[in-house]
Length: 470
Image (cartoon, rainbow, N blue to C red):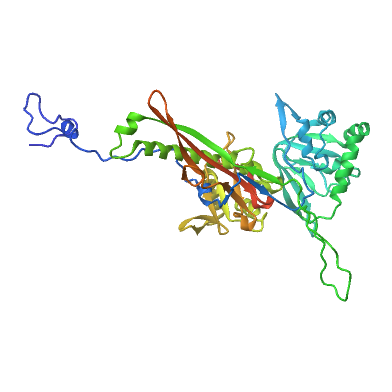
């Protein structure tokens, strides 16, 4: 007798069944089953590697030394068809205009910017020539070029979307360009001529007074990080008069409030009472709900506009890729911007793009051990995948480099533990009652935030192209 095949029925039509069928047998068998599975669970490396600081009062204040260099930020634009305008209030990102809030004067300045489109390889500012324009980069990349000790060209960095050149043009004495600015890609920019600024400043005394005050602040003693200087002396002999000094503090330190992610979990009492074998229904509902909350928590830590790491990185710690794809040179430059880097976070596609660039150069990506697990690294710094670093429609993303921990003036996560009805650290589940439809409700909440203790603790490599090139 031949075995039944998928094409043949288990028995011929009209033939008596000789044994119990599979379908009937399943009614008496206990199936082996899994707990409910969820595709949206990621590795959440950021949550797992970020050092957490206990915030017992719900607020975390970051005290710093007084810093004079403020306002050196990123400018935002609005577009109407092919025409681009700078938002007047965004001109306060220029260092000498920081804190000036007269909307009429800022509006007049914004109206005098001229839109230009520049082809790749064109020089828009030349070292040694008078600084006579403020340039706002709407779209594209501009490379700053200096001169080496033997007359060779040296790359000083790049300015990309939202950056600017020539902030000193609004000063009383703008001086000369100390670098050459050359376009790397096609660039759309807005240019404010010096003469246009002088016309408006000549009509508004408060603007001139504000710029003069900001210039005077720039002359105060400060270190290379812009912090108020601490007067010291060394290498002296005899009995000279030693300088007196003190460490000045920022009078308006930033305070971080704990953010909350919440949801209400609802389970019918009949389900909770009867359908708990072999696994508890409420526990499984709660497990998947907490997984979703943790995913949202990590997303907020990266992308929240108030405290997210992408938006809180100092603009002096942001660089752009030189050629689009992330190269070893780009990551080396990113690492060189801080005294130590403990971790690199990148989208999996960015890690793959970096691997392709290393392969092109015949360079092997290193490995390192972190918490008992081996993974990719660069210069001994572990590289962690973080899908919350989103890839834009244009195929670009960002890579984060961090120094971690409050002991090393790094990046820390903030939470409060010991809260009522705590289920996991910083997360609680509170019974809300049963309604008239016999539905049980639970309030599930997690409280968190993140803080960058000093600006150089967090760096960002921007405009990272992840698409494979021909």
